[in-house]
Amino acid sequence: MNTTQSLFEGVSVIFAAVVLAVFLKKLGVLKKDDSQLFSRIVLYITLPALIFSSLAQQAFTSEYLMMAGIMSFVEILIMMIAWLLAKFFKFDSGKTGALILVSGFGMTTMLGYPLIRQVFPDNALAMEEAVITSEFGVGFLLFILGPLIAMYYGKTKVEGKIVIKSVQKFFISPIFISLIAGILLSFISHHHKVAIQPFIHFFELVGNANLLMVTFTIGLLLEIKRMNSIYLFLFLAIVLKLIAKPLIAAVLTQSPVFSDMMREIILIETALPSAILTVIFAKQYNCRPDLVSLAIMTTLMISLFSVSLVFYIVF
Image (cartoon, rainbow, N blue to C red):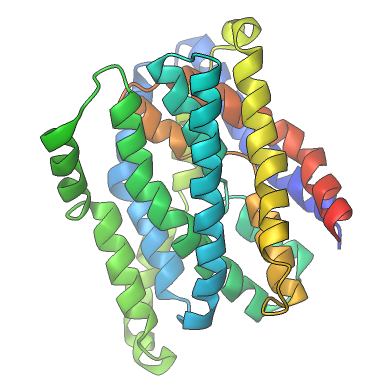
C-alpha cells in the first residue's frame, strides 16, 4: 500500500495544471477575469457530466449509504466547528464563509478515486464503496450547501426569500439533474446499458475536462502576495480539514458494523485536501475566492505527508 506515492502523483498533476494557469496569466494569454468563464463552464457543463458519468456506471448498493451518512455527519460537524472558530477569532463574513467551505468539503472525486485505486488495486468493491461514499456523502452536501454558504457569506449577502429561491433554483440546475439521472440509470442492469454506452462515454469525455477547468480557475485567482496576512486562516483550515476531520471519522467508525476496508476508505476520503470545487462557488458569489484558492493549494501540498501520517496513526 503506497499511499504517499499515489497522493504525490495526484497532487503533482493538479499542482502542475494550476502552475500552468498562473504562467499563462503572467504571459497575458489568460486574465484573472477569465476565471468567471471557467467557473461557469464547470458549473453548467463539465461538473454535471462528471457526476452523471460517475454514477451511471455504478451499481447502487444501499448498504454503502451508511458510510455516506458518516461522511455527511463529519462534514457538518467540521463546518460547525469552523463557524465557531471564525466567530471566536472575529473573522469577517467573507473569511468565515471561506473557512467553512475549505474545512468541510474534501477532494474525494478528483484525488480520492485515483488514490483508492492505488491503495486497493483491482478491487472493484472498494471502488464502488468509494464512489457511493463520495457522491452521496460529499456530493449532495457540496452541491447544495456549497453555493448557499458562498452566497450567504459572499459580498452581496443574501437572506430569506432569496436563499429559498436559490435552493429552488438548484433543484432545476444541471448539477441536480445530473445527480438524479445518474442515480436512476445506476439501477438499470448492465445488459440494458449496452445500447446507451456511447451516450455515457460522451458525458465521461466531457467530464474529463472538469479537472483542467477547475485548476485553471484556481490558477487565475491565486494571489501569492497575500499569503503573509492569512496565517491564522490557513492554520485553522489545515487543522480542521487534514487532522480533525479524519480523526473524528476514525472514532465514529470504530463499530464492528464497518469492515476494515470501509474504515480505511472513509479515513482516506476525509483526510484529503479541500475540494477544488469550492473555489468555483466562492468565485461565483464573491466569497473570498482568493482565500479559498490559497487554502486549497496549501492543503494539497501538506496532504502529501498528512494523509500517510494520519493513516499510520489510526491503523
